[in-house]
Length: 353
Image 1: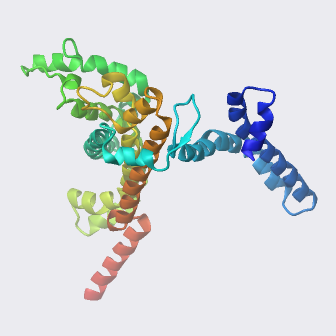
Image 2: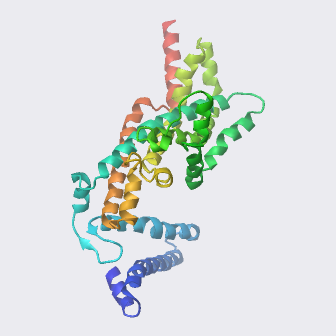
Image 3: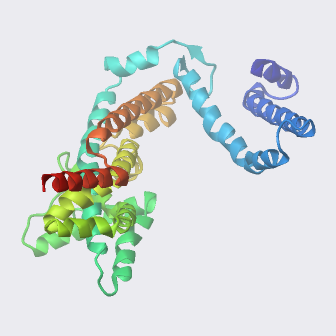
């Protein structure tokens, strides 16, 4: 159907323009048909007018979702089985793009995957721990605590290119703030982004700049923990460490679970830092997966291969997410489960008496 619309448009406009407009026109035609169908259903009292009104109000979002999310998503699958340079015609090559990735023909595929995994396994646990520790401090009842919470949260508002530019000056070998501080402490200056061994730890250190976002989520969870559980633990003779281990951690495990999932997804999509600060160097030590994908698509114009890389990344993220969800039964506890265990423990104690 798209080809028929495209051929019709090609009679009075350039073929390239017709190729782009055909799916959009078809989509808007479908929307129009759905609108007419909805009005007919309301007229025949098959659905309520309020239901049609609801879909009418969210239709801008639905249209945007289909045009800018769902359609590119489906089209990228189609492209991944073709060889295409964005200018010439597509050439169907089957699974050759996927074979190219795993066969080693792309010298940066395994290197970029290794770098991304290295960064993920360093940065995600560190962000979880640091964010949680700061949230514990910010949860104390101290005068002026709202000011401290704001101070710790504000850095997370600076991100993207601005953040990368800021940290370029901090990591600068000659006049960077970090090396100046090390010099005052009598420690030798480090090359940071210029050293293959230091570049990923440097970017991990930089990632801690945004732990304020995690801190806010943790803080909301800490303030939502029922105080009666702590009181019951105190009656049972539990100390501070015992309360933290047996009450705080289990009650916060859903929040930790959420931040872990979001952290892994975000770390696998790391791009801006390496693109702005290192361009994949030195010697490919910071060649992240998405940076390689970008270079394949918009520098080498291997759009089909880049689409294949995107779907490989999707499968990798999906596998990690599924693994964490599978393991969540072992370490994620919800409030009802904690209360049930506490009631069972109290019942056992009473029976023993």
